[in-house]
Length: 143
Image 1 (tube, rainbow, N blue to C red):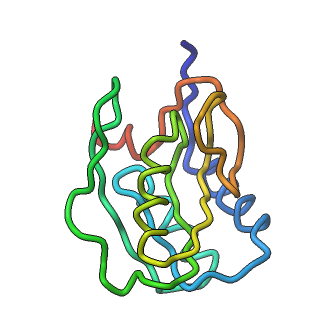
Image 2 (image 1 turned 180 degrees about the vertical axis):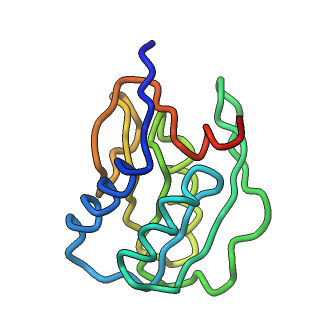
């Protein structure tokens, strides 16, 4: 599979591209750790909001069950939420997180930088469809 090295500059441009698609207001942003942390921070800056929360889930690879690590913040009830992650690959984690948030009475829209063909969940807002293996700059920082 081809690899695509994604730059900080492209990340910033894609964040603006996503923000420009959004024509509605949200009560808060919710990022999925770890991949969604960077996009959540960027979108908080671009949307000028401090109402930011994180959720953390594990699993999903090779048919593994997906489970939440810790509780969802109790303030996240009956809100209009923009849920953020870096990528909708298979889409299983996004489907699970969205369902968990909706079960708390929230209305949820999703934004990701990228999505892959065949994902179970095409985000409401995104920068592009990608077929290559994407290497994000925050993944390269730790090498």
